[in-house]
Length: 76
Image (cartoon, rainbow, N blue to C red):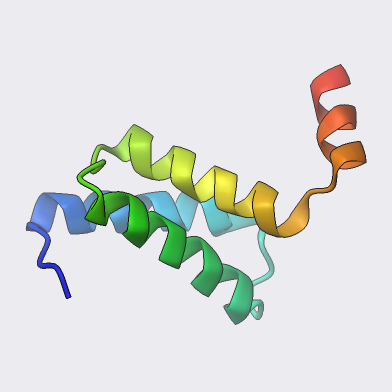
């Protein structure tokens, strides 16, 4: 497994916490899915907080959104 510096680990944790703050606390599978996507992003060298947040948000959309939900969100 790839080693990350402390700054990257802090950014990964912060992004995970921010992205998952609206996901129910008992939804371990959802949080694990988001975390895996953030980890993949960091492993590719995309390690800024913004990069990690984007990866986390995309994970939420990939896991939970359907086309109608995204369309409704964009129409607001």
